Amino acid sequence: MRRTILAIVAAAAALAIPAISIADQPSQQNEKNAAKFCKALRDSAGRDNFRSMFGGGKNAFGKCVAKNAKKDQHQDQVAHDNAAKQCKAEQAQDPAAFKEKYGTNKSKSNAYGKCVSQHAKQNKQQMDQQETQNATNAAKDCRTEKNQDPAAFKQKYGTNKNKSNAFGKCVSQKEHQQQSSGGGGGSTP
Image 1 (cartoon, rainbow, N blue to C red):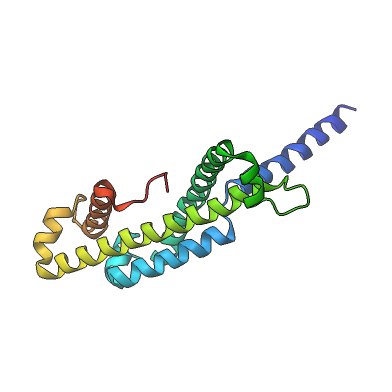
Image 2 (image 1 turned 180 degrees about the vertical axis):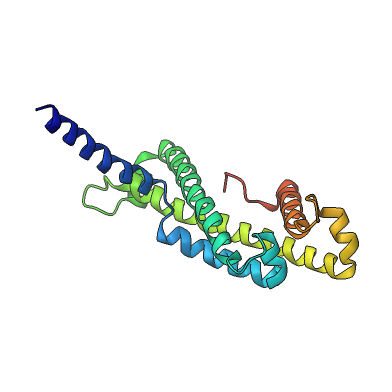
């Protein structure tokens, strides 16, 4: 009897662990979005600069995708949360008009879900466009600056022992400056 209970508990635990870890994994769509972002960043930065940003190896693209797929997954959630707030506010203003505008079934009872879906998609597209624009602009600026005086560039931005992280630090700093000056990104569309 005791062995049976232990076997059942072990089996239940084994089934629960993959379910938890799968939910934490980015979707295929997150990975596709990240790959598109990384390609644009690589094109703007140049291959060598891009590699230096993600560890310097030939797997820089894979590292970029892995890092940014998780970021994209988080952006999906932010876009959905913001969409829910937008739809609640719109629904509160005029419930009847809201049902007419978004409802697609006979009783229009699916209006809220349709609204959230529509706004979440729009919010995510805006976030993706802004993020890609900020990163590619920053990479282009850093590439130009690095080409003008590579030694001064390494001194200015490099923070590790051999200053090899200078390009990534430059891009990060310039992205933050763009976001701070109203260049977008954040958690609101």
